[in-house]
Amino acid sequence: MQNLIFLAEGTEPTEGGHAPENPLGFVPVEFALSLVTFGILLFLIWKYVAPRFEQTFAERTQAIEGGIAAAETKQAEADAKLAELEKQLGDARHEAARIREEAREQGAQIVAEMRETAQAESARIVEHGKAQIEAERQQAVTSLRAEVGALATGLAGRIVGESLEDEARQSRVVERFLTDLEASNGAASGSVN
Amino acid sequence: MFGITMAESEGGEFLAPGPNSFDFSEVPLFHIGGLAVTKPMVQLLLGAVIVFVFFYAAARRATLVPGRLQFAGEAAYGMVRNSIGRDIIGSKDYAKFVPYLVTLFFFLLINNAFASIPAIQFPTFSRASMAYALAGLSWVIYNGVGIHKHGLLGYLKLQSVPSGVSPVMYPLLVPLEFFSNILVRPATLALRLFANMFAGHLLLILFSTGGLFLLEYGGIGYVAGPLAWVLAIAISFLELLVQFLQAYVFTLLNAMYISGALADEH
View 1 (cartoon, each protein chain N blue to C red):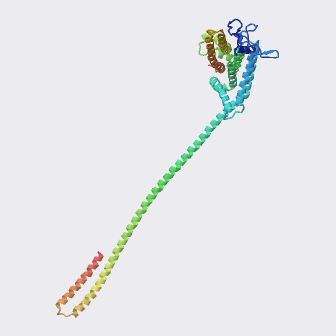
View 2: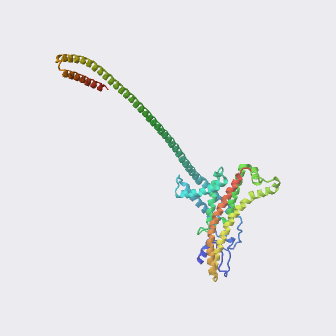
């Protein structure tokens, strides 16, 4: 503790031999020094420090605002692109639906046409068949008539050639002829119907 | 080391610290020409150097993405710029006052902090004349700004004639407003700063030297002495707060005076 006091004595005010100073008193040297020191410091800060900080602040603000602006532009572009793609997708869906509808209609039309054609064809075939059958029947009837004549002529010849006394044979021959005739007639009408 | 003024050889009588603890005129550190350079003067210069070196180093290579030092400098600068300058003076006019406010705040802060920095331990602005200088400068600045904007008569009217008051009251209020806004402000600025620094330092000296005296006195002093030192430590922390607050208040009031001088007519 003694040492501390001795140390202090060199630089600290001591109970000296001068009158006590008024602590509120005006000391011109200190006043002037304070003004000058502060003035120089103010000048240095104003000249070398403040502009750099302000410039940095401004640059930073600009960088942030620029970044935001760029991001907004990008966002707008992305939105536009998305809208365009959605529109294209919508168009494509619409187109696909339209094509499908068209294909369905065409298919139905084709089926209807085919059915019509097939029906016409079948009707035509049936008609043709009928006509052919009719023709064949006519032909058969014609040829039958001719054959019946010939047959009758032949039969008559044979009947005439046979002994008249044979009553039984006579009737049997006639009988057989008629049966044959009926059989052929029945077969012909069966094929027609 | 505090201004130890007690003299133990005087038969155990405790000499309380007083204004003499702040008078360095008898113990100048050195002389320049005929001028005795005292400790507070050196502190003043040292404070200015510290403030400038810190800010210059922080701002020297200012980049968009700040380094550690630049960040600290920007935070310090930005605090005064935004919370004192912009918020009080308003975003229209504040920019040109920022260097002044920043310089003022940190010059005061460092010089006040000298009261708590070991081996210095003396608040520069407990020298009243130094506080007068800054207060005087403030007075010149805010009045100058006001006169520059409104003209001398306009400014005096702005500061002296209260708005929203019946003219009947003018004879009473105008002198009062003039007195309060023009004459008293620099005095209160200087005295507030000076008195806070002076009283805080005095209190510290008292508790420190008193504790020492009590210890050497013996008896109850062996308890009271260390207790006084504990209190001295507590007061030191209080002083740290006061040092900051006084620098802040001084700067804040400057900003408010400037803002008032710039205000449009009500």
